[in-house]
Length: 404
Ligand code: C2E
Ligand code: CA
Ligand code: CA
Image (cartoon, rainbow, N blue to C red; front, side, top):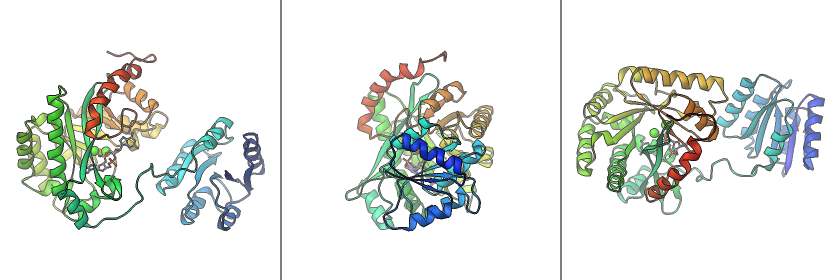
């Protein structure tokens, strides 16, 4: 493994080099400035697997260096190190991640040797895309055919109650089972569906399938709520509430068995139509959730104007809130506001044990995220429920927490 250590401070640089040596690293290269590192990176065949970079450096600081790394198409791991305050390093790391760099850590100096070891043991050479497909773009016509031919499939991610862990329902997450390209995730085709006017067909097909699955769970003895994502573009069709009501009737599901999760991905030209549609859906007692709360347009104005029954705090404010005071403040304020308005609260992006424990101590009502389960095809749901019932006691009865 080739490693680059960039720090203008000779002592810090030598210390890190020495620690890496103790951990058995043979190919570490020290650099006294970002410029020196960039010159090295330009040499063919010299691309390192891992870079440790100081944030505070004269001439070119770590943030500027990150920009150059992006331009150079650097694909290895990056660890940011700094003597500055914690929030600044975290912000710099967020910035680098937003540029799609593989940031393995953001640390204060001196770097603890355990953390170093962790970075070296980690699968550094692995791609950052979580095994997802290479980005490829599709034509509207191809997507239209996919919808018509049934290539879109629903996966489901559980939502569980806090603090008991009881399963409350499932969120539908659509995937495209492409015959050549494999499983394609929604961020690669939902925007296209919205721009090309295919979103109506897409949502209606996803919703009908979701209700059919909900019917099957109910017949198997699990009357669980199913959530479906709708985009604002769906809500300009004034007949949408009637369509939903008909679909519920056909599936034999009560209105309370369905929840629509709404995100405003772009500003609406005519804000009155969605308001009318959402109000009518609520009158029909269909659940409405404000999705990705805290980001983009999913904001206070919507909470003021639209009768949502649930507020879903964006995962950007959930994962890691236990160790980040800013996230925690936003999460807690959002939960408090939702409670005052009588809305149900959901935290998404509960990724690990720390997130889970932290939320169990908060007054959030529902949790969703990889710690509980990733989205799965419907045929896996019965097994997952059985497994979760076995695992549940180990995640709710541990430690000092008391369960009512
Ligand atoms: P979303 O509604 O916010 O859905 C949650 C996304 O976060 C899902 O990604 C889910 O797999 C992912 N996720 C779940 N748990 C965790 C976690 O613990 N950590 C992290 N980092 N991520 C987690 P996915 O399936 O790729 O969906 C992306 C977005 O696509 C969704 O975001 C939703 O806005 C949109 N989408 C999905 N299905 C549909 C649909 O049928 N219609 C519409 N209009 N949009 C959809
Ligand atoms: Ca959602
Ligand atoms: Ca969301």
